[in-house]
Image (cartoon, rainbow, N blue to C red; front, side, top):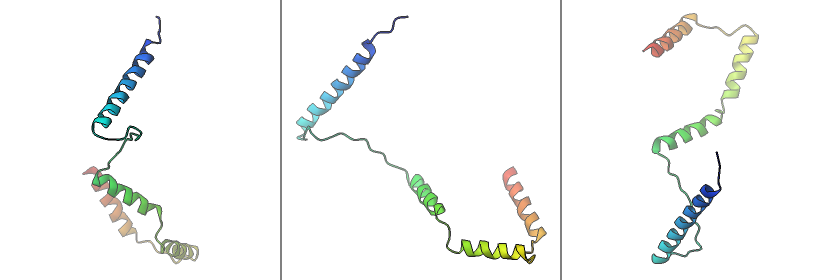
Length: 100
């Protein structure tokens, strides 16, 4: 199989042709040919909301350190009580939500 350089030159010619067409259109519309072309992107409202949520999750609540320290102190002094019934209810609820 022979590979030639004709494809890259064809591609380059195509892009050069497109750039010349854009430049000639800009001149017709009174735009400066020195202006650079740029790409743009727009995000949906849902994506913007997800970005806000993600940014909010990166920062810890200010009371979090105090809460963790209090629980840690209670565990070390055997004063932390766990309600097994509440834990079981949450586990069953989670499983039921997963099943449907």
